[in-house]
Image (cartoon, rainbow, N blue to C red; front, top):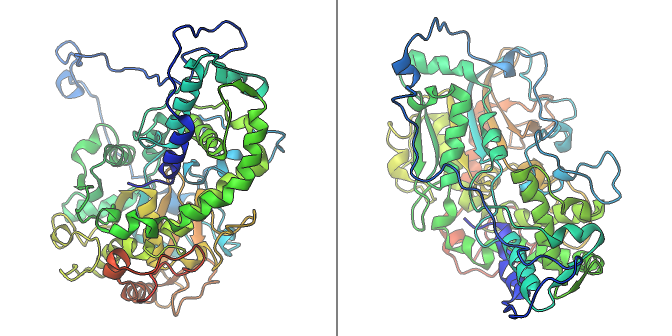
Length: 551
């Protein structure tokens, strides 16, 4: 999977450059950095060649004597609670504070897609009084969950590890480097992050997702287990296992759900990994946002680099790409280790620039500012419509859908009350683009020239652990009674399809109207042209509908 973090890796490598250590180079001053600075370190567990001894320590099924185990009613807080349980903190993480920060400024909400998921108020998108709590006289009959894996380590070769190599090379070159003031910690800093895998906090995020337990009664009545889907990448498999463990319990989840793995490899159709069959997403056409975002941060982070460079001497100085890498280390180290000494280096404005960097990148790569976003998200929305209408996809889907799986009742059942799909943030954002959820940016792309806050924010829409809920409800006062609404990270999103009232108090719109709106959006998406066409590379801001320019 492409990630924004990897796009600057080559530039950062150029800054790191290989440096040979002189045989006479030694650390002679307490002010100098140790020669192990920047080295990658890790813990090894479990010990090699060890397994639990099930003879001495038998499982519950062998030990027996479980005592009485009467079950109760499945939890259904979204319908029964007096208020909705929103996420207000990132326990057990300690994000720290920005340099000279006000007490109300939460830096963890300015990390783009590296932010931990948090509850977004519906007023962000214009529904001032809507909440995720179930509207009066409504009951949920079906829910479609689309969620991202929790916090992870950086992707392989991303800027944080490249920065670590640069610092390591500087420390072992003759004369080394020294650091002072806020950067004094760098003299003994080592790189403690792995790559690709979920962090302990990330595993917890996915474990905590479940809130629709009562809908499991439908499966009991049908005599069937649900099918939940994810991709074959390790962190995606673990994401769905952690979700299922939280939803069903441990070890019960092992035999209470079917987990389908979409193969994530170049050339394989999978709605959760559409970039594998969309060549244009992997060239400049798929990086319109990243190109603009990199240009946007340069003047701001050049100033930051100059400020931080005054705190080091010897073989080390910083560029704007190093600043981005250090801000990413702030995010990743906090998500993985609980705290990062890099965070207090940066001001509120620098965190705002950092967030807007991600806003621009994701808008131009995977949302309405991208020529390939709707095409990539088309398959998942086709599957959503298929599930809503109980009709299977056909071979002429013109998308990344795996029609073989999607036309098989065993692997793609159409009668579930709960659907759960896990995917990467880019795929989820592509899906929201293909759905036509334009309220998430209100028609205005993030500025690529001026620092300003806007409606669209990557940290609000695609943070670690992002959650999209598409609810099908029966609402007695409504006509018709069958309604749909969409919730993204606890924010009810207005629906703007023809026939929907985008100001409706609870974000509701008639089921048939929404399905018609989704189908109309799908009909506008030319997957083959967007993903394979030889059209002119657009500049950021020229695309505002997520569709490729016409020939």
